Image 1 (spheres, helix red, strand yellow):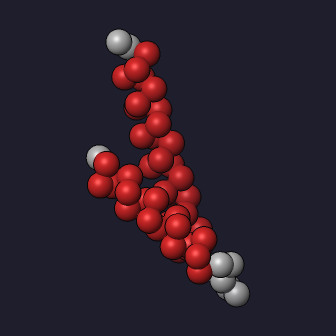
Image 2 (image 1 turned 90 degrees about the vertical axis):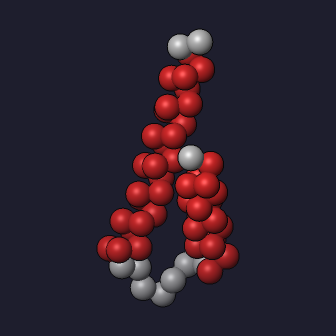
Image 3 (image 1 turned 120 degrees about the vertical axis):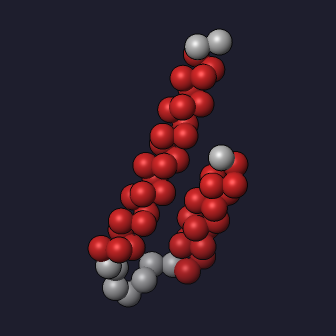
Length: 53
């Protein structure tokens, strides 16, 4: 799970370093939104585990 999270973070850092592209494609938006949703799901799962203890 941590490996996947690190991969998401690395992709986000890489996108920030590359700056705003001159042309944005649907694939780029899809990848970014997928990363956000995966991150959100991980946070929600972590919170559920913490509150159920």
